[in-house]
Length: 144
Image (cartoon, rainbow, N blue to C red; front, side, top):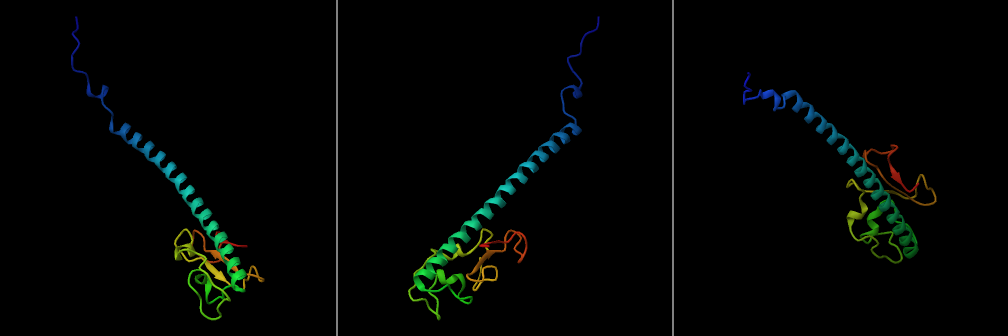
């Protein structure tokens, strides 16, 4: 009669180093997929935020012209919506944005302004350099 040993081999109850490495690799892959998905949402949110700011600034520029009789000059730029500009001064002026931060895109860069516009020759161009921060690339966001 054979008596069973109360002691079983360690390999029957323990994970091997290889098994632990495989589990860690699977967890890392899952985290990578989740992180990629979240960064995609973040980028889309930044683009939508910037589009909203450009729309709001376009409305502010329309109000500026309606009240003041003209758009800000190229030299005055979008700051004319926040600080009262010098000459040529509009007929009447009122602050149309609450803070200078509203003049920035979602990446913290100044939103660009050109008057008269090259894409909108009868009006103005207003745009962000987009996520890459480079001028004249496909990811620029503007009022055209």
